Image 1 (cartoon, one colour):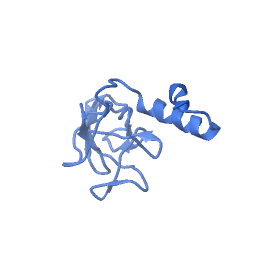
Image 2: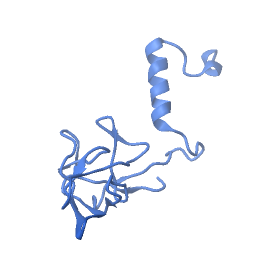
Image 3: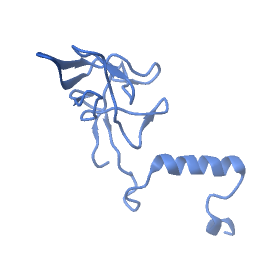
Image 4: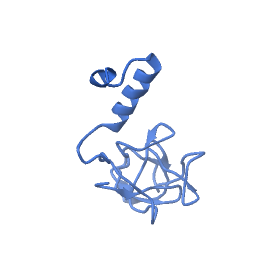
Length: 134
C-alpha cells in the first residue's frame, strides 16, 4: 500500500510550532482516542481527537482518506494538527495508508465505492448492469 504511515495512538506525541508570546507550545501526547479500537493495546487516534499542548489543547485535523475508525479518518504520523504541527510518533508495526490497494484502479475513493455498494445492496439494485444478464 503506497504512502502507508505508522498509526497514531493515545499517548503518541505531536509537535506544535505555535507560541503564546515568548512561550512555545512545543506539543505533547495525544489525549483522546477511540473507545473500542486499539492499536498495540492503545486507543487509536482519529481526526478530531485532541493532543496536549503547553497552550490550549490541539486537535488532529487530517487523517487517512481510506481508513476510518468509528466513522472518522485514522490519524497517522505526519498528519496535521490545528496549531500547524503534526503527529511525530506512532505504532512501530501498524501502518495505515491512503491509496487504493487495487493496482488497476489508482485513485479509487474506497469510501465512496463502499457507500455506493451498500446503497445498491440495500435497494436490491444490481451492482453492475452489464453483469446482471450473466
